[in-house]
Image 1: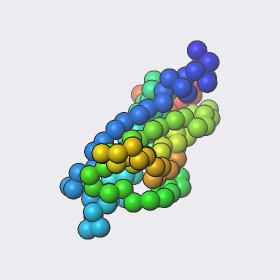
Image 2: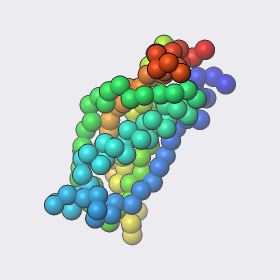
Image 3: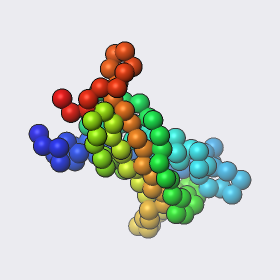
Image 4: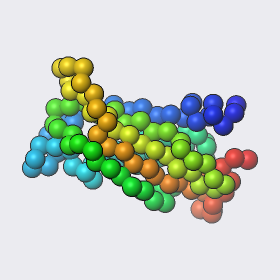
Length: 128
């Protein structure tokens, strides 16, 4: 399998409903909750690509382009964006959809960096 095929095969899509217990006093999704969901999708994407132990080492710029209201559906999409020797970057986008109409917009974008580790928790090569 080529690198491009592995990237495509590891793309991860998760859908969630935004319930009131995940929102702030403005009735929109907590930023920290969005970041938690993004890190989880990024971790799954990195693991699916490498099939190795992966750990988050940083979250790069996260842009909140619009609020995500309660009562909407979000889709999180994770895609490998860069592969190094022992590390990789995963881009995650959150799209918000209204439940009862076709409206869909990109709400949040961010990038997460991961390192592959061995059984001794030491960095190891991603592509062997």
